Length: 230
Image 1: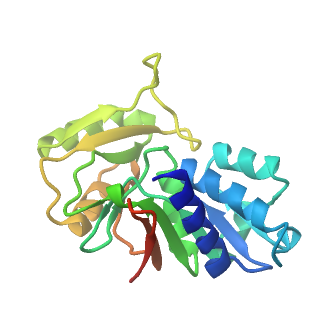
Image 2: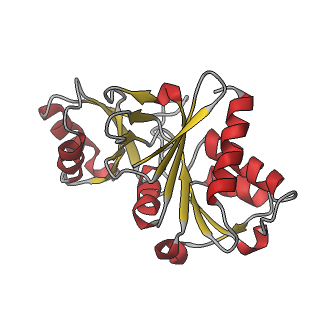
């Protein structure tokens, strides 16, 4: 996604969806960070009262970004009252809009916010849209269950790999769990697969998001963008 296309799309997201007095949930990643910069800039020139909006981030990265921009951070007690969630995606099935998320490790918190919100908006460039999901699925697992969950995944012909950092240490989520990135030869029925994986003892959450968002902003390579609604 080029910078100009992203800026145009993110400005549209703000104009069309953000209102004063909202409680807004924030996903993780570079697109959400860029959106916060656009929101802060626009608030100085349009009628957005930033002091009236409270933000609930899903990661320390985005929380620190919001704090840097002097945005008001809400706590988890506000989650049942979330008006809007703004988030990205790692891969989106263009046919049914099911997503794979969790590349940044915040899949549990992102899914909680998505299910709680009155409205969910997903931001992604066209390269994220595919005919069939192919990326490994991030699975958040309690460390105690690592060996069992990995063995169970292999028994259903999946290829699990514990996510590690550049020094070889397991990546820990902000909930104190590990991520097992799990490749499947094919994902024919994401709805059933999501349920099957969540039923494995020790699995906390799965990076398959079968709940469809309300709006998808899709940046195109020609400099424009599309808005897809469910």
